[in-house]
Length: 242
Image 1 (tube, rainbow, N blue to C red):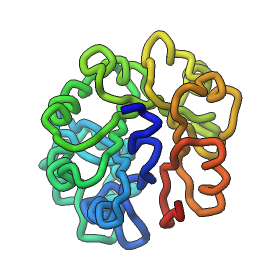
Image 2 (cartoon, helix red, strand yellow):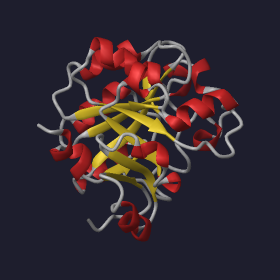
Image 3 (cartoon, helix red, strand yellow):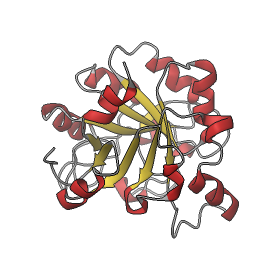
Image 4 (cartoon, helix red, strand yellow):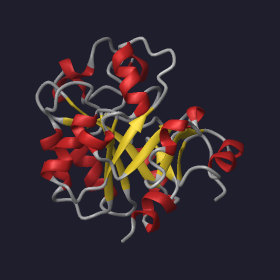
């Protein structure tokens, strides 16, 4: 199937599941709600100190759990009983999330690895046995390169942004990732995922032959505007009228 005819371009994608003030992002409940409304699901995967893959966005635990520390310094036993925000939801494992979604809707898996290639092979270990539709994306071109080499049939997306105000990324890294300079020789993505507030821009125009996704769109007005220049929307905070 042509990628422009696939779910990647034609099914709205719920950012970290369908979450709100009562339902935390990247939680079992958020994924269940997205499934109920037949939205594709974007989710974040990272590795803990013991190698367990969990679905969690932030580098640190504080915002979502109130516990101090970088999440990759903890084991799953350390974090499994923590609750997300003011809910009864816990940090789910990637394995359990795949079992829950079970092909009911497509999933867009963001690999949260800002360093050297490490746990990509473990992500593939689970996805290779998964029966549903999925794609992977990452800011890290080398994570995508790993899939290009080891699982070339898996659709992969290059995440990008202008990274305004992000002091954790060096000038050189911002320069390269903003312009997606490693697309042709390293990641060779099947689609682009670019920050919505930075669209349209001259950098994505160079890849007009690839589908363009916008993230994160937070209201219908922005959705309607961006659909004119993008092939699909990753949304949160509202139910888009398609």
